[in-house]
Length: 529
Ligand code: GUN
Ligand code: FE
Image (cartoon, rainbow, N blue to C red; front, side, top):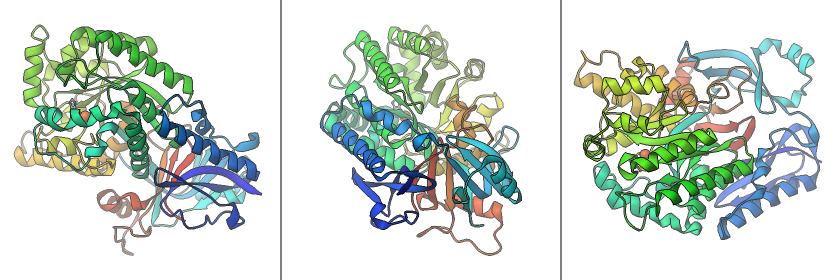
């Protein structure tokens, strides 16, 4: 007999799972060079053929994606986060919990028991109440995992701005300013996604990479191609990541071989993507309306996209005020609008579900409009430094009551890790203070940057009611951090207490320390044995 299974991404595929009763029950499969294993969760039995069926489903999904990249009805397979045979699935983690609240950017709770029932956090209680909790909820001993004092649980990281289609360029070609960089490197790279086979090669790797780095929720830009954008949808759905996926809208000021043919086609295909995602009925995945930025979209296109988003209640993402030449260009292109922000606002693109990447060069008036419309910002510090775009004043945005989160902006940024974005955000904030300490007397604290990476992200994607911290009732999107994992880049000493351990991880940790990644209660990455 096997136990209840979850599919996992593992770097240690050659080793047998330890929780299987017998080694022959371990299932390892290779999907795009990453081994995905079916691994046991104790407590609930699963027949071996059910385990096999799970494997075949995953295999056939990936096979189809490789060959034709077309609709994948099987994508619903990964939606099931309740246990098999209709039994509810309990997990209980005992140890240190770290998260943010609206009141406090970092709360460290020691000796706690956190219970997850199916996808949601059912209780957070004192660890010494475990026996009573067990009586109350009836979970077996095998559902309980006790963390060491060098481990902790934190909310999953939220990347509110990432170009999955620019991954082939990650770590390359950051030697030009934005507008030249787009024309010379980025548009040609994105154009290659006309080939769905290429998309099938790249997108699963992107999702594996971001998940492994602890990104439980991502807002992705794909490209202007509908069919390959569906492949990105498939990749997130099969891997169990929470994601917004956008087909990029662009009809002007971009190469003739890489643009939508017309506004009509742009709207039709964007609606087709929305339908495609809705048909998958995966509660973790949504389409997001994605006008690239004002220079590539005439006003009628932006207005129709705003109407489309309103009709389908979708999110919207775009870039705004990233560089000074871009702002000057927008002024030229839209002389009848007050400013950049007004271009988007008049088109109906500013809503509480809008993610505006960068937002560096903004007037007070623009900040007031953004705040009133409840549009959020994705601060992408790595990209802003690499492309010499500017230093975003996050404190000023927060002061205006604007929601702020972090984005990797790969491949303007080279790191797929939101931990890296967190560190760069601290650097950018310090640069502002170095430059003018009267104007910027209070650089961001580490605790505030932690909130941007987690709860701030949840606010910007308008999912604060569901994710972002470890409060009871929220979906369990979380990471188990082990500061002593194999190959850990950290050194912990006996003097280090919980706050030190958390701080050392945030500054020096990496994916080796992220030993488990949970999305909606389901373990989607397992980096340890
Ligand atoms: N503005 C318009 N397109 C892009 C893009 O792909 N990356 C960045 N960083 N800015 C943009
Ligand atoms: Fe971007």
